[in-house]
Length: 141
Image 1: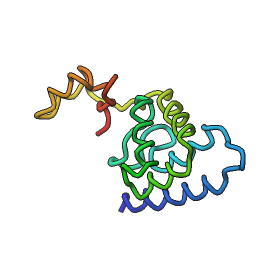
Image 2: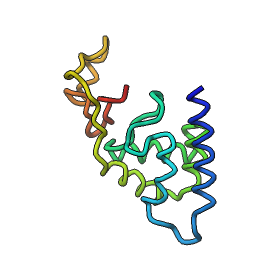
Image 3: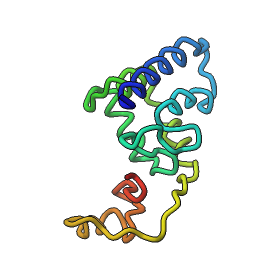
Image 4: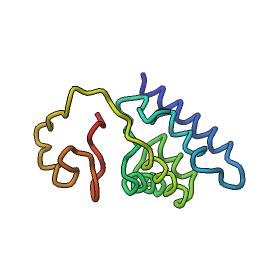
């Protein structure tokens, strides 16, 4: 049910955001408001299946946005949203969210790596915080 609600809210947000865009591009902060419908007002997503984007690495965010824009990735909410922006605007959007602080989650301590994921540390970092070339995994689920 929450997946459908997020989808509906996302589609409505996309339509409102795109319809409200003035002829001249508004600032990225106002354009990013549509993202809050699923990714959260404070960086905490509204659904556990929606990834955290606040504080994620800019190059990773841009790659995903670019791929939704080009059709390499397909999602009923993200694809039309990304296609409504230019690549330059998508780069600004990625930089905007990367500059945000990763939302803190209350946790009793660092979680142990799931089975089979210890090799992932080579790219994603000792605590899965990410870095070139890999995105942050810590705190995503």
